[in-house]
Length: 227
Image (cartoon, rainbow, N blue to C red):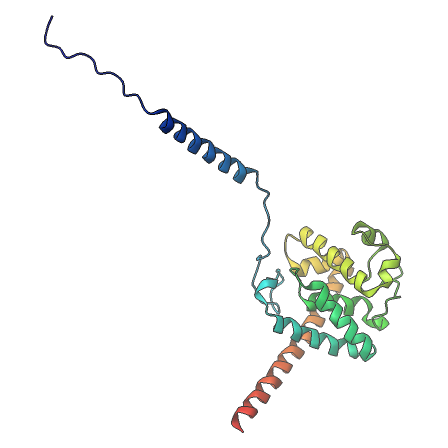
């Protein structure tokens, strides 16, 4: 026999240590599985571009309540030129309320109303030659696709809700381009192109009025500080 040392015995790890490692490993697997199976939720922060110049979505979360209220005031003024003050106030409030919590602004709903039924004093009973109904002129089948009835289109609030749903549908078709979505709200072809030009004209007029009111407010603040 030689002087060779006896082979070393394998180290035996404590049973509790092995179980802890297994538990940690299983926990990691469960966490990874949960992450992979979690539903994807798209964010509303799709764009923060200029409301006045860009056709893409405006991030509603980045716009203060004050700015939305200012839009409501301008809308009421624009509506009051073609309908009664009481109705103008009511419809402007609807434009504010029904776009709250969406990617849309009060102006978005107001300009569609002005182009669709501005020539009919924003009447809830307006009916187009093709059968579109209400202030926001929803076709019966489109209203039904969003869960509304023909009778609902006589209700300004429900008609506005249906219009928001329809605008969301068109926004998907337009791949997030809000201006193109408004064009699709009318349809496609030459008539839709003319419709979009009317929308753009109304937007420019409302933005000009908004700027004018902001300037007046700034002058008033300046005057009060110099007194």
